[in-house]
Image (cartoon, rainbow, N blue to C red; front, side, top):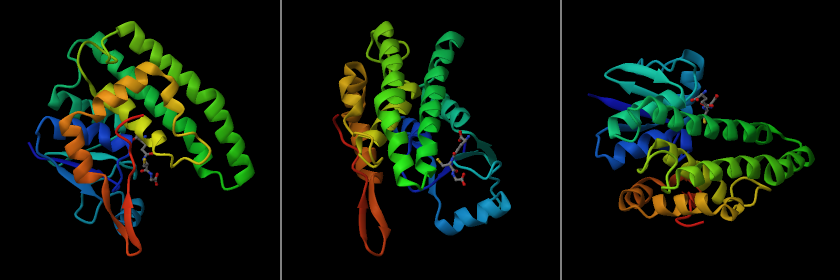
Length: 230
Ligand SMILES: N[C@@H](CCC(=O)N[C@@H](CS)C(=O)NCC(=O)O)C(=O)O
């Protein structure tokens, strides 16, 4: 099976929830990271220059044996199934899905503030997110971890649900979102424990060493400061 994951050169959760399970399970895949020129081309044409279809002109796209598949949730499930990190039991699979969809919801809650150019309005939006929406959703996630009581969201082992949350928390903990305190997740003990557990896994450390630091421009090195601990 030939697998290619197409995304930006960033460790964003939408891609990491696919890349990391494949990497951790030693499944070979092409980790294709697009350039600005690729982006312009795919937006205009719905495909890459080599003809690879990008159905909704958005990323990630997973290409399996030449078939392009869009949408982060579906891609995560395929990579989860391939890597044994997605349950075959329909109830447990649904429990994994509800977490992935909640990570999507949280991402979408943040999006309007990322598009806001008026700094005053943006600051207000970020205050609401920091004081209300994000803590509310983190507490719901915390409750699910508490009910499952294994340290993971579903069952007794790590799944793509845990990886999605880990990557989302790492994004916040980097401190790249103005006026969202990077230590916001820290007051949630179970989320913090999950984050730190995943971060310290040798394969995760290896992945971070390989891919979380790279040159982005002629002006210098850009490092993703995704912390190992929160
Ligand atoms: N519904 C899509 C949304 C994907 C999405 O928003 N991708 C962003 C990057 S994180 C993107 O491609 N942005 C470029 C654009 O929309 O022009 C999914 O779940 O994968």
